[in-house]
Image (tube, rainbow, N blue to C red; front, side, top):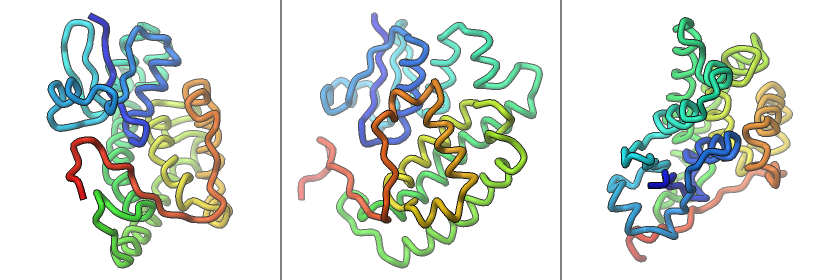
Length: 228
């Protein structure tokens, strides 16, 4: 059977998997979940994005696991070592995993509380958004401390940590990382631009535009969401 990656064009966590499939030219069919709802829910009842079904029928969800599988599937030993860290450098591998885990969970969730107007139709209060914004200020510094030492988050070449973090940051740059924010965070802005322009992500983000003024957005309801 042909391997399948389930993703959704409004969800951040599936972006890197799509980019990697495109870059490595892998035989994996990318399926938009709204175009195959029944099979997606049958195979991934937790509705997790991305969801990967391999050619032997194995199933993987959670983007760290899915990205890892796709990178190894490429068979490109040089790229595997570059993106995931060399097998004998456990410190580098640990740093990559730490950033991937942090970016795709706490960081992305906190970005959502500032950039979204509501969650499944329930408005996000001003107090919640303000508290999240204060938390983000602390989180930004964690990234900036790393970029003060290296061109990228782990070392001076791109790893999967940069891809995952940049995909998460794209939500901010699409909503409230406006011109004023970018002026206050030049290291993060330069890093973000470099990663989006990399060979791994440039095709996916070729039409990406930075927001001029901060906005809030609402997600489009999914087929299984309760009707208003």
